[in-house]
Length: 324
Image (cartoon, rainbow, N blue to C red; front, top):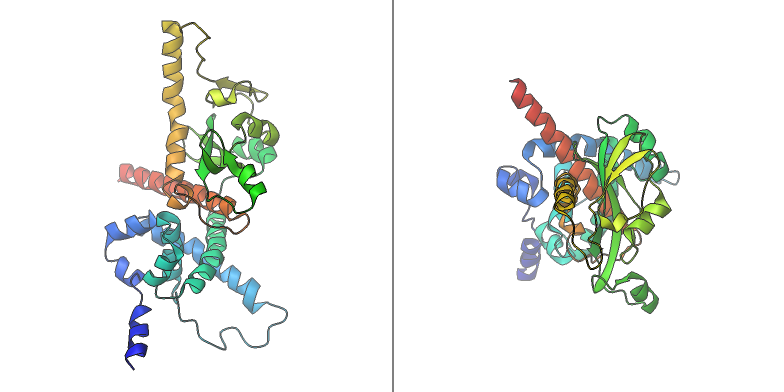
């Protein structure tokens, strides 16, 4: 009797949406979103969840009983709890054992929910139009419709756990970072602060320019592109590029060259701010522990989508406040 009571108490939810929503600062700390932003994203999440249920349960060819029959779902019953769960995981990135305890379940159940809801969250962001372009060849066509002509490009590297396999250890080891890492290229609008393009995930030791040459992202004619010295020699056709000048060996830059470098850096710094916005999700900032194939790429795409969602929502809120 005592053991049963203890287990019931052990699996009681510490975090539930009905409790968290009454504490706006806690909701923001857990998810990176305000109450209004959470409610707005919930609409897209509802669409993505309904689509997931329909494809995987309702319309499944080998279904034996009506959807909803059988053992009842005991964890994350409401849609709000599901969204809170996956946003909390992306934002805070706790250990799965800790996450399971906080949401009243066992670790294996938390693991299943993480991967299921990650896919649903990505679809929700895609439904809202917040996911960045992944096809470099289509980027120029997409950017033509954007109210933007000035872009920044940069690489961002993330640490990952040391693989057990010796070949993978060698593959992912970055001598520059003295760690095992993965890398993505990011293209962002320097006025909109939106992530327009996210490259596939590469091993961290791959040079930024080499990734750019391989992916070859396209840009609209007569647009401007700001880059750092890691992209020396990268000149997309029809694009005016700006890059700080390197100091010649054994010489110094002239005052005019230093002043020009300062101007370029003041504009280019926005792409660093965009990457910082992406890394508000600690899952792409802290040491990456997950081992599922391609999950490192999926979470980076989700983090970019959440950044774009916040930027668009808060820009709309600012415009509405000005119009009042």
